[in-house]
Length: 213
Length: 213
DNA sequence: CGGCCCATTGACAGGCATCAAGTCCGGTGG
DNA sequence: CCACCGGACTTGATGCCTGTCAATGGGCCG
Image 1 (cartoon, each protein chain N blue to C red):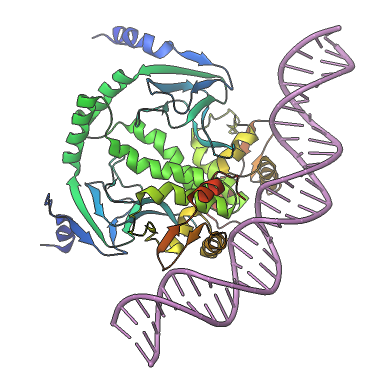
Image 2 (cartoon, rainbow over the protein chains, first blue to last red):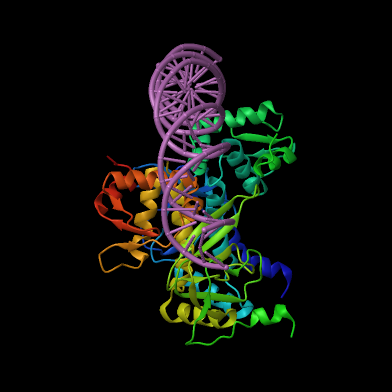
């Protein structure tokens, strides 16, 4: 089959996407899993509410991630748009067919199952650790490779600090103070709001590994 | 026959379980996923080591749970026996066949995928919360229904406090102090080591929900 | 009986949450 | 274009919580 025909066949899948505005809800915790959401651009967050009403951000999702995988019949968390989003919606039955094919063909689970679970698993490891600097730096190294890179070598960090705080289980004030600390140590720079420039990545990783200073 | 091959022989006897002693390792983080372990009796723990060397207990597993599900090619955590165990070993290919059958027949994933991921997800929610009492009580209510019940209505809690501490991301001293606090409040009793009696379950749940006192 | 590991208890200091106030930025409407 | 406004970020002072250290007790096993 000629290449140009292949690309035509795939084009509708690629180009058609549903868009959502920042703050919009993709699905609610407890709703029946009817669709799997696949991010095309933007950042989304998984949210759970603890019994005392605290908002907990359990994961951040980026372009290419699939959210809402029917590992149970009902969504286990709420998914919201952090930035403006473009995403695709797969019906559960279609997604299930792909899973079966993957299991039979390659003898393995869909990689996407992993991509939804892993962020939450890693969050558990991060917030188990003590010290604001350790947590913030462990968070940075865990997502830095998923962030869009700018021309000047900076990374765009399109996350409000209040969400970072809810993800790290610390207060927004502590996030702010820690970032200031990292600025003073010349490890990062923040030329604009929502924009972080990693100056000394080795230092960040040193802090994250607990061997700071 | 080389020793390393002998150790892999964990003969797949269906009906007869394999036994392991407390402290023994079922599999190591990073090893290739060749088997799924299904607990028949006893308690196991999932362990990860943070970059600075801290032991983190990411989950507890009980009778009926399946551990080591090949969501990735390599185990993502180490599994160890907390108490003496009896378990069964399923080869990865056999387990995969069961997954495919389940997906095609019932149109859903194996419930066991959920049972391995859920404890770690819930741990994230628990350790996000502040206050020792809240964490300990949230932990208790999350596992109490999985513990073996005694004749006198007490629950056996076969977990050393050091493991509870590693699970809750607090110190063993704090676990001890919190349990003492709960004893003084007549919410629990601890007639023996490794044995906890829930006297006032409503109080425990009230503490866990943050509406304590 | 002795040794070891776990549990327990107390004193102390440090870190982080809390509260409060002030600043910056983007958006909106005149 | 500018004034206004609301939300997010920033910064400081204060107190409590809990981690740390040290010592003791207690149960289990050799």
